[in-house]
Length: 420
Image (cartoon, rainbow, N blue to C red; front, side, top):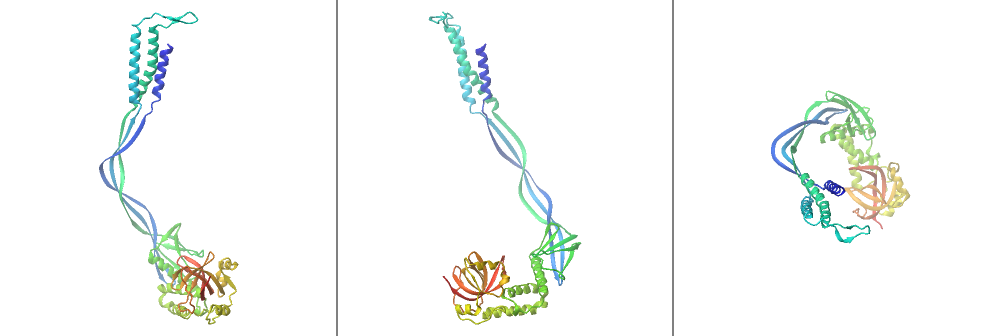
């Protein structure tokens, strides 16, 4: 019984080692239907602004976002194909060897069952008969054929195809628009760049922010933790209102008493404020612009500078007596961290012209530090302030200056010449 049992065991083991490959493909069928799915999503908070000095009137509304999505529904088939590359060879090998085993077994009953007397072992036993030999070969053939048949049969049983039919959706287009506007009731917080935070009560969408007692400019409105969105006109109105707040806090100031940087900044604030206050600030604005025009045309320094007339670089050094030298590697560069403390002081600068931002404003690079330079329109020197040129200049510090998104120390050029 040991021989047949071993054959059966080999057949079962061979069937358990069958490798089956799965291939999945998806085939889209016809379009079943097209429909629109509507959704309402949380929207933004908007505000309209209007200035009636000293009041900034707010009209705050909250809106939803209505989202209409066009959906196309298709029929789809997910087909899983199972196949085994061993099925064919295993079946053919199994059939051939099994049939051979049967043939050998049948022949074994025809041949002689007498022992082979030409062979004898030490125990005196003769060799196996021809019938015994053929039956041994039969078991060997079955040991090969039955496992191969098992492998082929299992592979064939596991092969096949499964089809799963389903419906799938695909977004074809999407359209969204603000909808359901409604007035807001709550508290809007006005925030400023200096840490200002003032609460403005809003009822039925209407609120008022008073400039009286406001400690600084406002650049942001917030409802709870949601920013209040402003259109372009609203942003300009808020900027103009904030400029008026700063102008009001500064009070009346003579333009001649201001440094170049402070004068430029005040003129910008007055221009912005003029958009909402009109005639109330036309006088101070005209005075500031007149003083700026005088300095640009004549190159004369502001009240903070000695005011001497110079005709050369050496004359400028002699007349202005700069005590600081701003150049790559200089320890004086650290003083640029607080340029307001240098306002009105003359300096010597050595660096490379980085780029120009406007007709009379440029940038000078001093060993990794940048400085805005104010260039008078009418100037006596012959040096060119062109990109990439190395220059040496006498200048007067004038605090900070903001141009676009850059805020840098500002210096007004007195004399300029080409350097190393």
